[in-house]
Length: 306
DNA sequence: GGTAGACCTGGACGC
DNA sequence: GCGTCCAGGTCTACC
Image 1 (cartoon, rainbow, N blue to C red):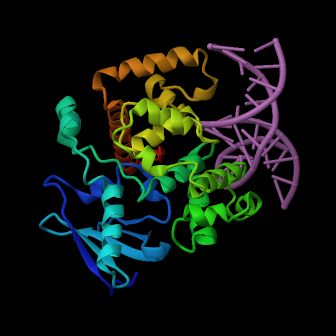
Image 2: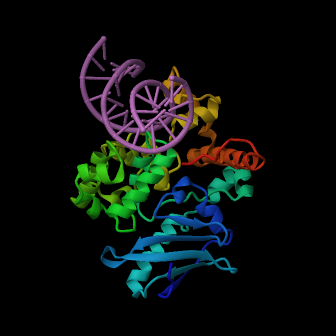
């Protein structure tokens, strides 16, 4: 990526670590994100004025602040827009003081900020493409969405709203998800789904969760997962990975008494309220790190994805 | 309220 | 190379 435009600075909390913030949630592996582990830089296109693409390269300076290199010069307002998107991705403005007090082990591990997208729409589409499909397939869908619909960046609601579900299905291999993705994009463009309402801190998690469930294609798992992306951690996104984690068994969707098991899982994390999701994800994430370590020692297990 | 089956794709596997 | 099976969350129809 050429960086011969504006260079923006972004202040971060003292304990902030870019690599930890990026590699905390699997969406960082999905395009248009590109994480360079050697140089510890995050590269991706963002949307500037009039939805024009701005390629950015995000790195952390020795003083701790973030440097955002852009591929073109930005006016002040457009630079502010880019800063806000980076801040959202890395949850720079979120306060995790209470979480660290509740979970000292996570605090010592520096585990708090879960990576997300520069806007809610991208998180929602990524969640839809992550459902009912293998992770490699999710990677393919997001790659094709960026390449064939978004012009290199992640598609905007306007771009997807202007795409027919048939074309989306054929060109991006999203299958039956095409109707749901286009439907969500069109409802946003028409103003029927109000993103600012969903991000309003005055709303309760119950209100947001119920509104998300009204969106076609968003079920209990996706709604809880999107609550997490909206900074609400008091909902558990229970999926087959969760059943695997708590039971050590495969085939979660076919387990008997799923409702009873869901109640047991929720009870297990109740003591971390209102950070149940973070506590659950911390367990998974430290497990993955252990798996990764064993993998380097020659076993056949693979690092989990989402 | 609970359950079964369809949706769709790519990968694994057997032949 | 081809066919079959499987994983995965949501929706709908049915009991």
